[in-house]
Length: 322
Image 1 (cartoon, rainbow, N blue to C red):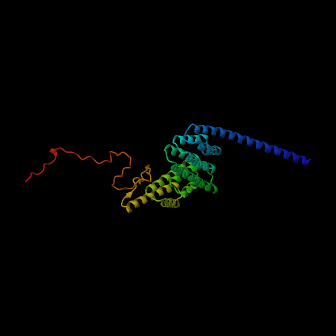
Image 2 (image 1 turned 120 degrees about the vertical axis):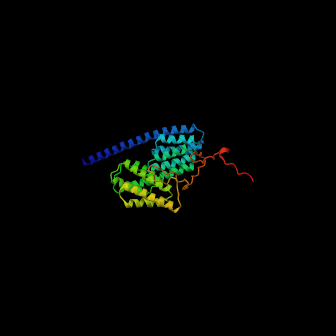
Image 3 (image 1 turned 180 degrees about the vertical axis):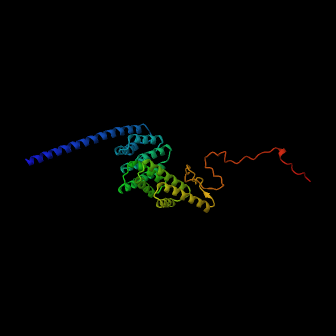
């Protein structure tokens, strides 16, 4: 009797496993059918253009597109990249490299939206292949670092919601040269204090602003990192730390003015709301008119006044000849 019961349990288990297996197969088949349908639409877009050869379409692009769709990259985003690539005459091998970075990011479990945005931004600006690959590779690396910061915080027992959003925020700050250690501190401190994602975002943006300002003032990454580290060691209050960084930066700028005889970057000011200029800007001597960038129209306010032409009656006559 007991043997019969065990046999019935075994048969029931096998039937259950078979049903689950059949269900999984049906889901997989349905997903493959959707991918095939989407891939056919992308193939039609490629075929409607003469930008790529048959070899490039069939052997380079379509297999890569299939991998993207299978990985879960949204069809709309994939189609937009292809359409923009065709419109901007982006070569097939460059598109494949872009897809590889995007696919690696997806397989690492990282948000792909920032990569997709950078790709389309680069294409819209007619950036060359090397520039686009460099930008999205850097963005992908910053996403990995940001995810590591978040993972370490979670391993230490911190409960964090909206993890993907926080990863994107941290990656943006890393892109603006905020030290990785400072961002790790921000997540731990902000979470322990019960701050919302909006507050953490605001603080991260403030740190980015201060870091950009420091870079624009001529400080090296090592000096910036040391300045941020000292600020976090001197206080545990987030607001005080941001204030300490700003005060330290102001001291650094004033010291630089004294040491170099007044040579500072034109945007090296700490006026509230003033965003720093690009770090590629040239330094300007105090009292010196900034050099005009090539290709920019001259402004009227900076032009020298035209010499006045007085009438003969206003000019004293020359002395009489002897």
